[in-house]
Image (cartoon, rainbow, N blue to C red; front, side, top):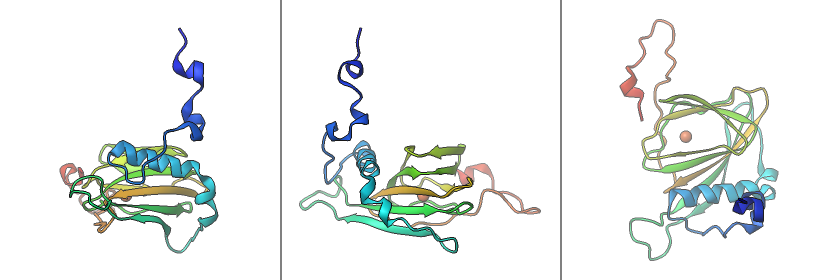
Length: 180
Ligand SMILES: [Fe+2]
């Protein structure tokens, strides 16, 4: 039997056939879809990207306040950030305060270190995280990378955590301290 994809083609491969992304997503899936839509609109971000070997480069693409008349729950306001990573650059271990987020790799390859181990994220990969999620993102590759970060509500705090890899002679923190 033919699937819808066989009959109609894969709608994800044809962005103009996707349903319009709401200006105020109200679900995690909605924010992930927003990130994919921005990622697909390469002209909106590619000319802005800069690489800086001396300090982390980032640029806020959007800051959208909570929808007028919204209750204290969804739809929340959000921010969209563009980040670049030259080889060897990393974020340090951190969480995102009260914000949830969607990380989308736009170009290159990043490695995410979280409580459940390292994972390699190639272009198009997405990670969704809740408030309190602790991770460290590093460009371990030999080429620059670019990523898109949506935070909802907007990022107000990014507490740093001790590195998971303890220096020689230093006792590592017990695993439960590092769990999100
Ligand atoms: Fe993060």
